[in-house]
Image 1 (cartoon, rainbow, N blue to C red):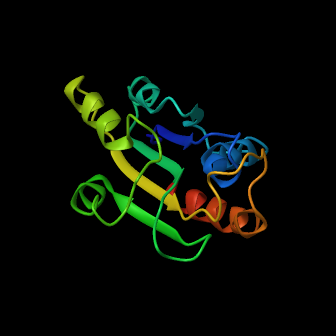
Image 2 (spheres, one colour; image 1 turned 90 degrees about the horizontal axis):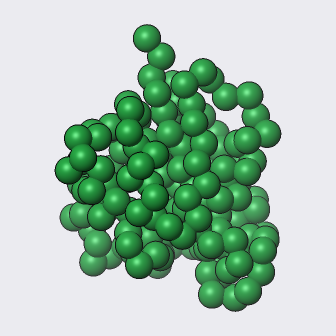
Length: 151
């Protein structure tokens, strides 16, 4: 039986690198993906993530993640890792965060495996609809990591 997988991109396309999750979803939509894989552009409404999780075996969330590392650095985190390191990382730049959305989903009985791919932005405050060059260069690497998560 094929796994039902959700790839969810989170971000605001109006603020350069803050939209990286959505840019990744747009790039993935150009690729033939395995059966059972659903793409979701969540935008900044992270609470919407909850409804997309229903019936999924695995959820891969892609979002910008603040860290002191260089732009384009990628983190692969589990929900427990995010919870235990919230003082070091900001797993989401949005008011209602990923942890809260997943907790809400669990209360509704949705319990997929969750992987969070965080990408360190260079600029997430300037207006602009394209990621910075550093993050553009990271897109193929991020997509490879997501495809590996589908295996």
